[in-house]
Image 1: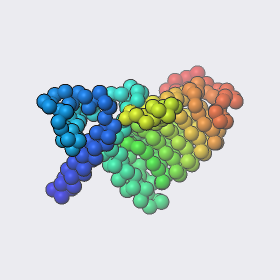
Image 2 (image 1 turned 90 degrees about the vertical axis):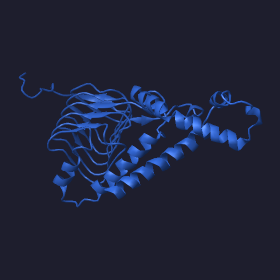
Image 3 (image 1 turned 180 degrees about the horizontal axis):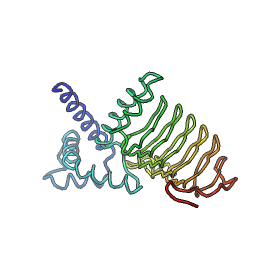
Image 4 (image 1 turned 60 degrees about the horizontal axis):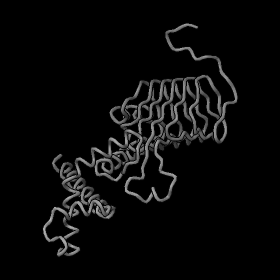
Length: 260
């Protein structure tokens, strides 16, 4: 336990130092000016001395900057995913996913139990085939009796909420992460954007379906194989295509415990 704690401490320190170096490299002229204004005879400083001052500045402001970036992330605004906390969380997620995917093919119930405490919320009888990939895990909520077939991916930079009795064919992708269209914006420090995906109850996704950031899907929706869902889908609808478009209306969904 002591060794594991030491490894974690060393890893977090390494990530923090790497971020500060990254942050100095992305520092704006305004930020550099703010740092040097607090120093007497700044004009006489060497470049190495200035570099150390920039590092100290970003080290001291790391906690407040981390909080601000997390708020931007949750608000769907441009943020940087390079802050140490998020890098560490992604590394922890990769470690879990490696263990999850290393289970034996017949260990379906073991994999189901592993999801408890990894996902934000997980219902009863949730089964995910290996291999599976996600970004954080703690932004995923999945209701009772859901099934994901082989090779599914959830990029849960924002929250992904899935209702009850949902089925996903092989290689389905739920993608909350995106980037600005303008190439100049993608060169900035903050070029990540995350928008939540919400899926209702009793939905069926054919194989190779891609759901893009910010999409809300109602109850009782069927999405044809190979579709790319770019816009919200109302309940009781069959859609297909790229982009996915309605092709059929279904009988209204009746929630459990209610009557027509």
